Image 1 (tube, rainbow, N blue to C red):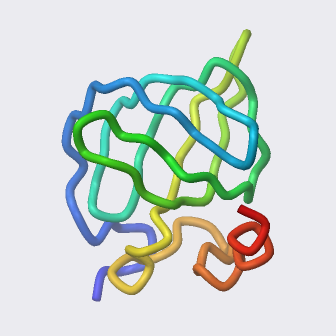
Image 2 (image 1 turned 90 degrees about the horizontal axis):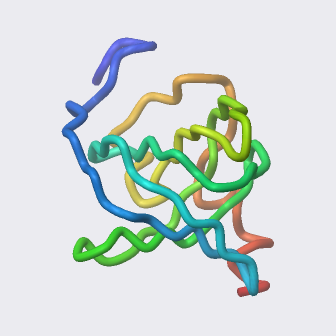
Length: 110
């Protein structure tokens, strides 16, 4: 298992348009990189820490994830998204519950 603060998988460049969806809301952006555990993206508008989204990843399909960090920018944000199906192989970067269980109310409302 990876030591705390170290990633379980390497990041790779991933320059695709992304769409974060939650109910009727869609937030568009551009991916910067991706790993087995998550994604870093620039978004056109701000999102909330801990919010869950279904993320369209271009030709890669879509995955569910939770926002685990945010860097607010003028006109949007750079965010880190942890994929919910990857948590067994990844150490959390912060003491934030990113398990699929933490997004169950969201999943039921989809």
